[in-house]
Image 1 (cartoon, rainbow, N blue to C red):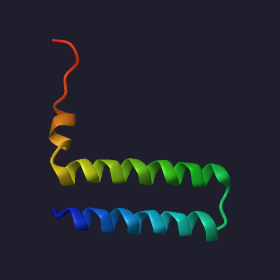
Image 2 (image 1 turned 180 degrees about the vertical axis):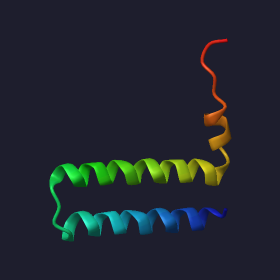
Image 3 (image 1 turned 90 degrees about the vertical axis):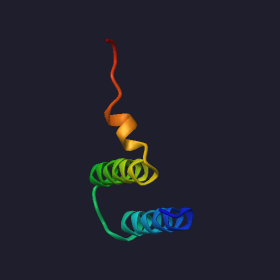
Image 4 (image 1 turned 45 degrees about the vertical axis):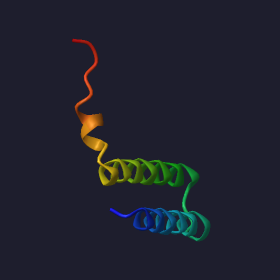
Length: 63
């Protein structure tokens, strides 16, 4: 995936999350959960997009 596409997707997700947090009335606990879920989803997607997700899922601790 080209770097420009990654940057555009990250900007769109960031702006969407900002608009949701700013203009949709929600309890702060729900906003916090939403932010955490979106950040984790974007991190997983980004790792998959650059091809590092297989390294994370195959990581072993110990023997």
